Image (cartoon, rainbow over all chains, first blue to last red; front, side, top):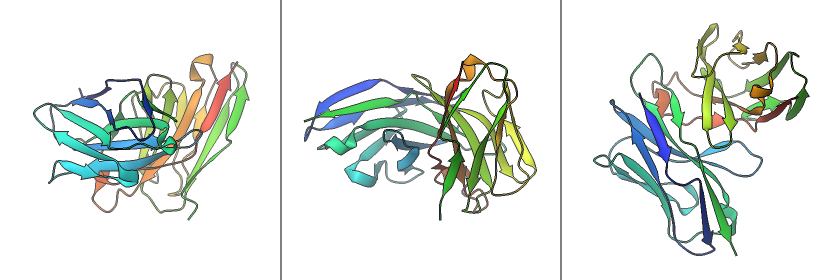
Length: 115
Length: 117
């Protein structure tokens, strides 16, 4: 069975500091990897995704993530956060096999950016 | 495009009542799905559809029904509400027909916050 684990439920950080949100996955088949962001009282929106090719993926709002196949990780990073980055972040895997593709989400990490 | 819309935004039900959460998309997406979001559990797939007339169960389907009579609409029905169904419900859609499948971006609605007393 496939699973996604986000290692931190909450990450407090000061404005302009770097941040890393950790994500590990488990799967016996090839997967696609995604990070979604949910701002307060809103739906989720795609931040970035890894499908193939370069293991370093750049997304919106200055975020990037690196796929590490040997460690089955897809950690999200930003070199300098802003107050506006305060949100909940979800890592997800998309399964390639089966009759249709499904997304499996992690538990979410709340990023709290402090002034 | 309005994208994915959901109604209502908030709803309070009593145990045993039934209701329908509405979801519509105007992007001509084949794939639509319903998730519930609970604290510390992320999003869990309830039901999904790969096109009009085709639906299937996700990981937590019990207590919910869906139908897909048109490409645009994918309503979620709670048959007999229970307090365990208190949650935030999200509808999502993506373009399955391009062949990209799960690699394509999934678009989410703003959510319906449901409380069952």
